Length: 79
Image (cartoon, rainbow, N blue to C red):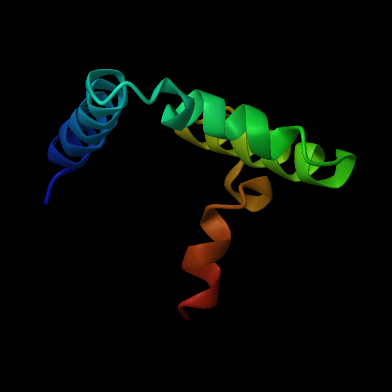
């Protein structure tokens, strides 16, 4: 699978889920609302989730050196 195909599948899955939530009359199951609920559980959860989102953005935008990229750690553990 190519990166382009993986992105297309990811976007399609998110769009499908969001549409299903609205069509079923259950907007509380939207991904963003689920994230809101999880972040509001406690301060630790908020920090963990915010860190995960920030780490993902930095990785996808390639704004962080490989040695600091937590996603690159997957590559290091497979040696």
